[in-house]
Image (cartoon, rainbow, N blue to C red):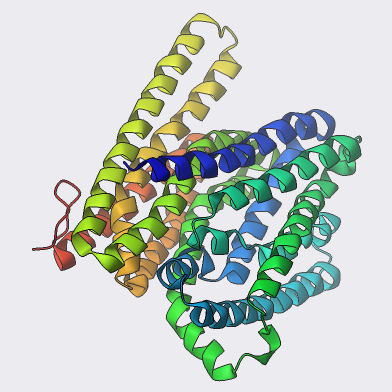
Amino acid sequence: MKKNTIIDYLTYGSGQLINLIAPLLVAPKVITVCGIVNWGKLGVALSVFTLLGLFIDFGSNILGVKQISVHKDHFQKVQEYLNCTFAIKLIFFLIILFVITFISIVFNIKDQKLYLLALTMLSAQFFNVTWIYQGFAKFGIISRLIFFSKVIYVVLVYLLVQEKNDYIYVLLILGASNTLVYFYFFIKIHKLYNLSILSVKTSAIKNQFLNEYPILISNFSVTTYTQSPILIVQYLLGDYYAGIYKIGDMILSIFRSYLSVFFNVSFPKFCESYSKNKKEGLLFLKKINCVNICLLIFGVLILIIGSNYVLTNYINNEKIYKLLGFYSGFIIVPIITALNIPFYQYLIYKNEQKVLSKILSFGSVTMLILGYFLTLFFQLKGSLTAVFIIEGLITTLIIVFCVKKYRISFKNISIQ
């Protein structure tokens, strides 16, 4: 692995480490002050806004990164792409803002204040420019951006969350902190490329929408099957169990953050390398993913051995023992996910967004059905089982399609 690639991983990884530490610092404060029930409500609301944010994000987090990494030396192409992308983002932002406000006020939904105050999460998603810097491989800027936004978030939570009902301010603070920092960097990008979002032609918006909507469906499907378990748990078992599930999901988020670092650093490098030389691009894909999977397996084994030692020697409370045993089950899931990453990246480069969206849509629908019934009959264990099954199903389908159409395999990445 090249030295600059390792540096990029460490630089970007430091930012993601802060992303990971922030909720781990916030969780004890909120749970202690507001209770596990309100923590569950926050988890559900965060999942809802994560899903809504995908529409504002559109395809920028993947296809946007690809476009910028390939055309980063062509000012006009990047400028045109940014103008069109932010025009689409603005349209979705205004539509979702209106719909959420209308539904919250007219239908007087449960936890109305929580959802209305959390609208800052949408503005943060609109001004988020990390995908642009990712395309340019400027990971140091991304780390600084994450650092400042999360420090503001953690500090404000500790200052403002003092009473049980103050949980309604947590997402407001998160969205506002991100918006503040993202907006500063958005202005820098706006000035650098002299953006003119409102002057984009309708035909250009339409063409980009048609090209990128499949990746929106893919992203929405991925997020649906990762976020729907807590929604199902909350619906069937209540806010208390949703809070318990959310704590377990935070363990999974450790590995998700790691995989996010890996994907976000390796994908633009793969796109740039493959566009210049196919063999070198495929060789990079093979090497980097072999290292990734080995590191991931090593990390999981260490955690399994460590958690088993703690459970066996130090936990005497049966209820806590069962909960920790449930939480430890989450750490196996990322290994399944990691297996499909090289094939997923390759298919995106080959513009197979529509096929990926079909696979992931099928997975998300299956997750909703299977997750509902397994949770209904087996409670929290059922929800975790559903996650295992769906991750395995999606990974299998992605690999099988890639192997059949392009004759590409992880063992020997080459095209015959």
